[in-house]
Length: 152
Image (cartoon, rainbow, N blue to C red; front, side):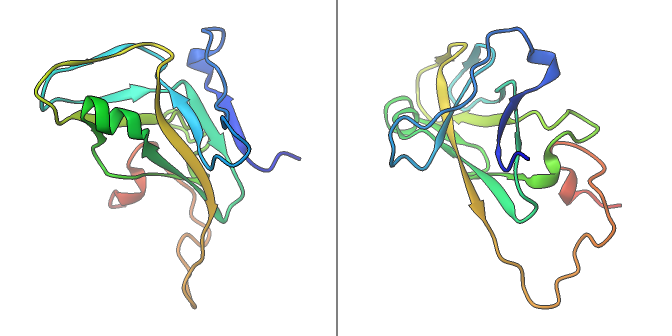
């Protein structure tokens, strides 16, 4: 049985998407690349598709962080500072769990992202819950991106 990892979403199957990899034995993050090119004018934001989904244990999360080279050299930041991919986002009915990277250009020059360019890193991590937590007992995710914050 698989524990955690990445798969290509069906909409991007056969399009040359590479599964994320750590670059060294002590790297915490798996590099995530853009599945499509993007252009960001200064101050503009964009949702960059990765063509990927992530599966993990129920008590795990995938945190998404900007690659430091994009932040320092190209003035790109994640619009939400740190992305959170919950375990039940995988194969959700809205978008199959497709991971998008939400970027904003904080620089003074336009930035072009090339297809296949590494733009973020994902770090799997276990998490704890508070005593008496009953969140989600019997409930299943009803949507995709941003759905856990939606009112039912």
